[in-house]
Image (cartoon, rainbow, N blue to C red; front, side, top):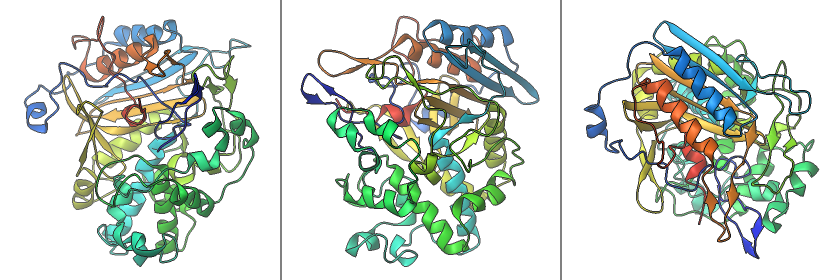
Length: 436
């Protein structure tokens, strides 16, 4: 979603992704030099190694903290073996430590939950993926546009609808973060957010190209409500969250995170100095696009249930894994995006999952296709990078440490790391939205 960044030397720093106000990671391409970007080449690579090197995983978390992250927690799984760890602090004032099982706002990982609920309705024959949105919500998207945009285009971000974040947080267009504080307790309706998105500049004709937009998934929530007759968040809770056996995952009903959690520190590239705590926040602005709270263990359990066929039948899971390529400005393939789910290629093969970010909290979760090898990781300091004198976002040592932990967790301690090279960012939906 196009989201304005702060002004820099009189220039509007535009860009961002999943919540431009959410998270934007390294501006350098996320392509891992040693990783093939075509499915055929990836398939030829060896699969993830068996076993967990617990000491290496611990060192990886410590490296993230030493690079400048306040706190990080990680859950790694290999078949029946599990490891979880944490490093750093949950509160920079009291030095209260982070713990592995803390609740965490997972941002756009919510999109996978919402997409699963929509695809369950496709299985029941209530929704057709290639039907126009106007068939179900005739008044929502005016005119011919509503007839051209299909349900599939919403879920794979090819609708051409802009993001609503600038409308919801208008001060960002003037290089100010004031609206982040002004709207801390503001309740947005889904219809209001969709209105902001429809008023934003189009990112292309329907089906023309991939462009990440939270508006797509707010519309998906309204579509789910229309066909089920039930509010979207309670419906997803009953039919996706509970069906997956998740005990610590929810859409909170208040601005509070409902249990033990870290504070959520937002730097906004140094324009909030020192970083401010946004752990108390009305998340109606994210809704079915990004309001879920979970734990790292629950995220692993969720993707294991999804990829194992417990939430969708094989036909709908195949639809979910039908992807479009996402590239950076140089044509490098950063990921392949499906329906609320993406594939990312690492040195040891292809993994499926999503990433997410909200003010002060970032998350990523990836699983091997069979769900045997998994990693979910959360951090509590966002947009810690800085822009150079040309307005280009510079990679940070934290990016390198995160990428290294990600590869070691999923590929094992013998996997090549990025020492001395470019970091592999574990947050590609955020990365691709940085405009230079």
